[in-house]
View 1: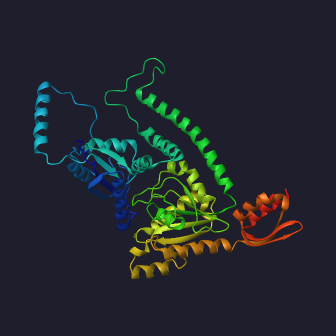
View 2: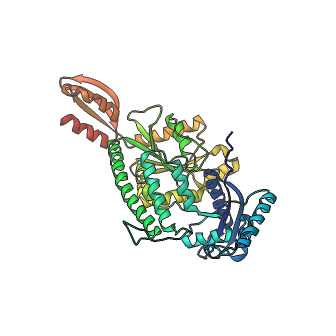
Length: 446
């Protein structure tokens, strides 16, 4: 019978700088804990300190560093990583001590220290020396989650690129010594060789990704005249649950951060004429690595090319306003802030009457709902349809008898209000967006 490997254990570390208040700091550490649990690790401790900044060599002051080391079984001292020379007597003594410690130890110390900030390579090395644990910063955790959750070929290519860009500056020589290579590439150290391999792999991935994205651009181009809504917002705000409720699709719904990395496009149900397409996009998060923002160009393009953005927010989260600002700032980066948008306050079933009144006063134009209430989802569907109806115009089209094969395209692109016949062909009174009707006119006369 196979034994299940033990769950990796981690200690969280946070620095509260003067510009961050207590609520935001606590919320950030709580979010980091959820990220770590998404990785499958168990959070067993937390160390936090108020400091002017995060630039110190070991991040923490000496007292807090000692406190962290006590949790992880480290020395608390930033020393050399070079192995000490041991005599045979010392080796026998240490071996006996290790056996005694193994017998006495009830539980092994945590293997990971997870820091709620982006660290430099030297800070990571210093913390590892002092704690004896493997150190990951916030960016490293997010990149690893993306790596595990990517499913489509495009997402896998995007994440591998971001991962390599994260790893490259953090490479270090092995403790066995970075000797010079023999043969091809002679004169390169092991570190130089590893970095060159990463550069070559990044170039290869870039070419592959461009080919995949060209196909995606063509698919989006084909949908350009269709009515499109993009669900955007912070990770775990309930976008996928809302997507499933609006479209009846079996998209993945999990109470995890970054459960959705791949863009899903489905038709609004019950179907309308013309059809309304709904896109579920990758969630945002505080300090989302820029390489990941850049990599997920195609996912973010769904937001840029949409006719309407629905900013989905977890209204039950006390830090929802900061989360909303993160989402808006990412979309500003790609120029999607000019797209018409509506604020959707989701998970209202978890909000009490007093909080609901405060939210209504603070956001009078917001749509309040729970993705699990059919009546709320139906009202949102009506709001989406009304938004597009306001931009539609009515027109009469004549479909010549020789072009009856275009009838399906007419029904796909517009709503047919009436249908008659005369000597020239089928006379259709239709209602649709000006761009779609203009395209239909060109098709009928060409």
